[in-house]
Length: 244
Ligand SMILES: [Fe+2]
Ligand SMILES: [Fe+2]
Image 1 (cartoon, helix red, strand yellow):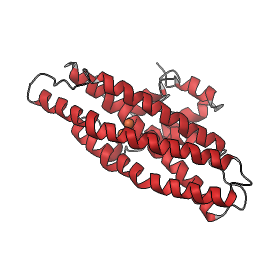
Image 2: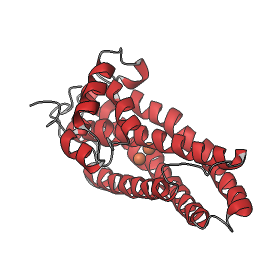
Image 3: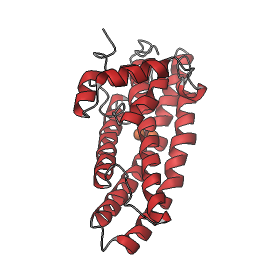
């Protein structure tokens, strides 16, 4: 199998340094990462050769320790997701809400897309607040219990939701919803391109949305592509299906 026929998700899993390339080209490696690279490039009208050359350059660079989850425990990964990505969402969402209100108040009359973006940001903030709560209160503690039981040679604990695949399916579907909202915001904002001569608040709003999207992609990638498959494999007692 060549890089062109590998899925975007598998390339990102094999070498996390490639994630920066996917971000740069706007290729979805988290929610929609199951497409072969060629197909993902065609969908974005990008030359696959150009992406492969950038991937090869990135692969030659050392992987930052924070991106390398091979051989590390799920407890460590859960802690990292909460302390890095959930903390970031909790810190940024009130700021984005405030910036959206200020930009709409100043420019909403002349930029009809801004109130729509504001409504989608509000929807995203609400969805993420509920989503993070479910992960932190229900799913993540269960994954920690699963790993501890396996370490002690005990049978897999069962949650009130049955198999761990059930809450994982719900969280994955919520990731798709958040990813769709973010993509709609990106489109409405013309890839976060402010108008010429935009005021500092406008620039700050679009830059903050761009950074928020990048963090959300990394966050969802860690959950969809590493944490969740490992938790399902752990419960099934067959070891990890992901060897990265
Ligand atoms: Fe999360
Ligand atoms: Fe999540």
